[in-house]
Image 1 (cartoon, rainbow, N blue to C red):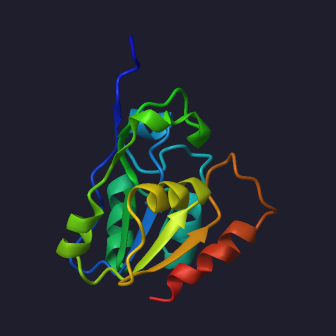
Image 2 (spheres, rainbow, N blue to C red):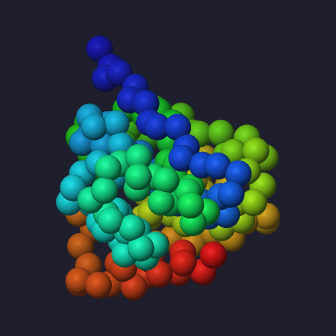
Image 3 (cartoon, rainbow, N blue to C red):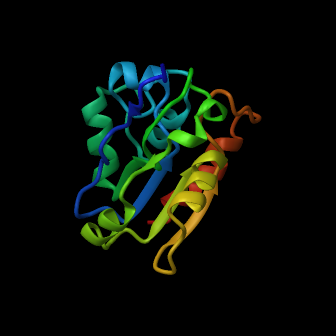
Length: 164
């Protein structure tokens, strides 16, 4: 019997969003706590807290509100997939269900910059969605603890999203 399809989260977005940060699909730990970047070892909240001046350890809803207040939206490329564990490499390529980006971009036309949180998010987007000429796209180093860089390198690379 096949492993059931896992389902990701809805977008965190509002009418003021100008930037979209895309992951690939939530980790097992994120799904368990029902939060984007729910693994405390993932650097996402520490990096965005530093960049946008909010407490990375604040309650989840406050962190989401802080991102929305600076025009940043969150989502993942995949809506559903099968995956054993949390590694992007464990995503079953025959199980991919992509999120509806045409609808998202139509409903939130102020989004003009898309940043991929890592290479897998970019590869999945390019395979399943395709880039349009309307948006600017850029890959950033993954905030996952599995993607090791020297201290400060991820934060330095992520500073580009502050050009709102």
